[in-house]
Image (tube, rainbow, N blue to C red; front, side, top):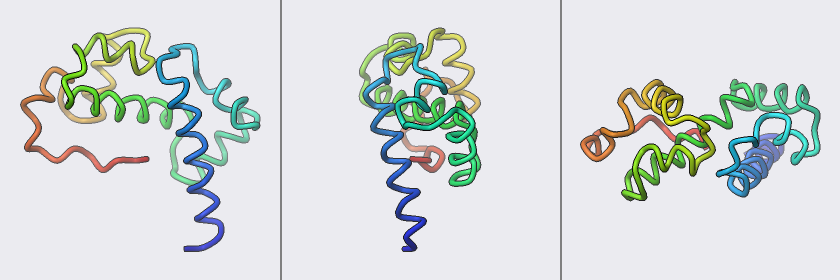
Amino acid sequence: MTEKRSMDQEFIKKLIDILEINLENENFVVIELASEAGLSRSQLHRKLHEINGKSTSQFIREYRLEKAMEMLKLNSGTASEIAYRVGFTSPTYFNTCFHNFYGYPPGEVKFQKAIVPPKKTF
């Protein structure tokens, strides 16, 4: 593994740790993540895009969706409850994002256990 690759993985881990601490905070968006990471918004965007080709908002959204999937598989609440617990302000928007990311709505998770979900991005 190259030194750059190792540094990139360390950087992503740092961002994930920050997101985990702030998971339920629906007001924790790009500017807050950048601030916590010690970067400007544009620096964070450039660095994330260079590492994984994603925007910062997409990175945050997909992390929240993957955490929601974990909770849904464990039957940790209704889709609406989980939406709020992973930082979405609207269950409707959560359902739309979830369906777009996984290909089925969150209410179908219990029926989809045999189907392999998309590769984890984190």
